[in-house]
Image (cartoon, rainbow, N blue to C red; front, side, top):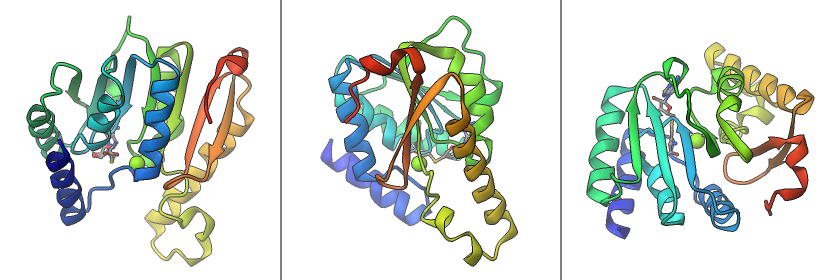
Length: 203
Ligand code: SAH
Ligand code: MG
């Protein structure tokens, strides 16, 4: 397994795939274990790196992960098969905003797809949360750029950063969810329903 993970890290580096940072996966794995998480939904599989590491956190975990890019999807299928975790990781090749998951509920939803669509993802997928479930969002610092907006030259990148800032405001102002922000990895948030506040084992 070590070797498979190392290979994925090398592939990500060589192909500019933004995989999750070590500290973030340690944080999520700890949450999975401490809270008996069983069902996970991930938006943005990329090459399957975070899905595989979340599945390794506990044998009880089953993951559905969604990827819209065909090349990445294929790479993820290859990696998940090679890891032998294909019984516990289901990869869906589609746009997350087009997927219909009616009838399914998750203990943990990990938002890690297009950074410009975070609010849309949250609004759609909060409906798929089990009681006591949480939504974790990655890359809220967007590689450190959220704090250094003035220095960004690309209009596109600046636009994305503005959207991430709006998402952070959206979370802070949300009437239904409480969100905690963590300076871990590239910036993580953990959101849970207000009435669940006392049952969460986060840090
Ligand atoms: N979770 C991965 C990294 C994901 S990178 C890891 O940490 O290992 C973000 C991925 O989201 C990219 O592969 C991109 O193709 C995918 N993506 C972006 N928007 C999407 C959407 N609307 N639906 C499905 N996948 C999307
Ligand atoms: Mg990420």
